[in-house]
Length: 453
Image (cartoon, one colour):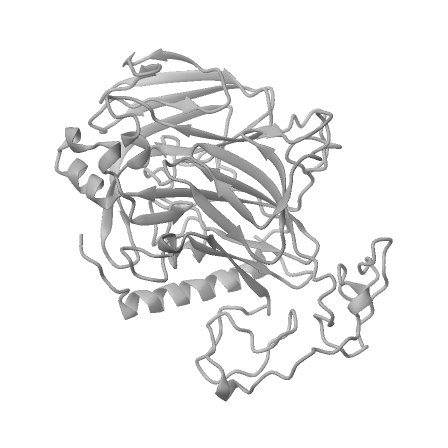
């Protein structure tokens, strides 16, 4: 496959889509949940498809899809949600539920199966597989287990003489088990009183592919795959590469790649990051803005007493290992910046709560009151002396839109702060060696009161 620069028309479409995304926030709901389909019974299928890449080529894949076409989904997706997708549908269940996954193979040339990390699965139907029952073309196999523990888990196909091939080709996804709602009233990852409360949750699923292998599979050379010859050249977050990562969930331009990877929060909002690596290579994923606090690994809370998440370290990077899931809390406060992020005029009020942040009576709840009224510490150069990015609001103040030349900016209509979330391996920030690309996402901190979808 040849290297290609992004076509100008494609880039323009991306920027316009980003603008549409920004405008869509105005009618969004207050809290963000990971998009997926709810159980406890799921009817999946496996089929072949091609996914688009931003340099105008496509990649042959083997994918999971939802046979119910979204009838039991938690998000009102449009037509075509039932298409095979990368990653596979995110499966959402409650703790204690008896889960069944029925898998039908509609066209994958090898028998496919489902392995769910952290769970003892009983399989039936289909044919004998590598580790459990598998589904050859036209067959259905069923997988049953009890979701005993809340957390984030990986599911993937494992079958055939080359076990890594099915993950390489895209047969993977995430299972989210929420705490038993009968005994947990809060919005948390591991139950009331565990210190895992959050306002918003986002999935960061990291994968990589070797396009040469996909070309071999498309041509029917199934025995040509070996792990030793595999060399990744494309890196994904939630099944997309930059700049496609920022477009909305279920965007019609990405019919087989429904999940975005642009996180959103207000100051002091606790964001649950579900960092998952179903692939075969390690990925050092770096989160700007604030450190993360690790709360769980592979569906097990990091706790000294089995209750409170108190053993996780604080770090700005998750060294995401293959088949590993890390849950972490990210929170941006603006504390101790040394200047007032809302402007140094005293027209707005900051009444500190017990922790020093603006309380509900403040103009901007969550403001760090110790910096209230402090001026911005430097004089910014004029717009004629700067290179202006499309996401620059024209102002250093949160929620403020400064004057910009015609045609500049426009993708940050609420004056938010953008922080890059990306791989710390430089090669993973490219697509076919072209920068920028690959695993390059972001989070945007929005002014208090701005709706988040």
